[in-house]
Amino acid sequence: MHRQLREEKVFKDPVHNYIHVQDEIIWSLINTTEFQRLRRIRQLGTSYLTFHGAEHSRFSHSLGVYEITRRIISQFEQGKYPDWPRDERLVALCAALLHDLGHGPFSHSIEQAFQMDHEDWTCKILLGDSEVASVLRRLGDDFPAKVASVIRKDYDKPIVVNLVSSPLDADRMDYLLRDAYFTGVNYGTIDMDRILRMLRPFQGRVVVKESGMHAVEDYLMSRYQMYWQVYFHPVTRSSEIILRQILRRAKELYKSGHSFAFLPDPLPGLFKRELTVQEYLLLDEALIQTAFMQWRNEKDDLLSDLCSRFMDRKLYKYVETESLDKEMIEEIRHAFAKVGLNPDYDLEIDFPTDLPYDVFRPDGKFREKQILLLDRQDQLREISEVSDIVRSISGLHRGKFHLYFPDNKLTPVLDKLPQEIADLFQLQT
Ligand code: NI
Image (tube, rainbow, N blue to C red; front, side, top):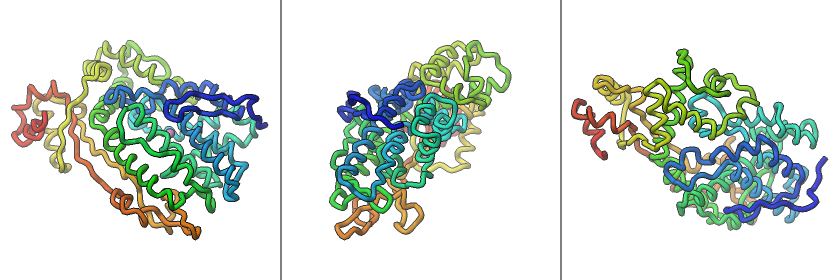
């Protein structure tokens, strides 16, 4: 049964000013234990070690994505566009609100360390034994499966998927604005109101009126800047590397039968990769950081050193290089081992890449990855065909190799390394 709240509820939000909740179902979902857990997971993982303001949570981002989706839909409904399927409103709003429900603590690092996928977990929570699932079932037994299908991007109404996940979706717009606000950088400030006014439902998907092209160009440029200035910041990468090493080391120790002085549930299940939904939901950043604080005293020098580094922000230093091949990496590893360093932990190589905007031909099957402009004759064109700016940043593949290392361990043995390798690591330290 769908009901409106007797009185609208609002959340004060630094990015959108107010977030409006009119539907009882949305209010109930926000108040579930699984959604409240998102308050204990930071949106930007370890970025707070680079940008100290970046402490915002997935809770605030999820509310923001919901709010942007709500505004788009209400504009579609006010415009009385026949291409917007009106009975999809609640499915879209629930999917927007819940799209990040399955994120774990320090998501990207933990996903890499344990080969997990937050989207899988989101769906397991939506379809499993959870409070969220029982709230969703109030709208019908098949309603949780519909929301999960939007999140998996295989829902039979692509326009609903478009709203939550496409190159110009509510998710990306919220995180650009929110991450820019909380990091304090100036790159991500886009004219969202203008973009929203230019969106149209058209032939089963969301497109942009041609006159909105410059606002979209601005959005793609912001996205490009944010990737390089914030998301791929080398100091953030360094903290992610240490975090992954901690998890890797702890897992190795666990597998080798090490008896930990501190190992609360559900960490053993995490190491064995056997977590139930209920156990997974116990994972949050408070628990992970408590473990790290305790492991500073663990009887394994490597683990305790890594945990101290992470908690005290004694991160790895890095040097950059344009080119690096497999042989060179092997040589460095070999040289490191020879002087008593541990090449599995004292050296990490990183090559950050991301395409700001993937360009595909409009007739390809990747139409959902395109931004389509709608002209006055109701013709659609892929934006990079029209915009020089978009074309110039499309498919850009820029970046350098970064070599990360613990500077306090490397410096004392630097002069024992072969000259070529020593030069490489001496460059910028
Ligand atoms: Ni998101």
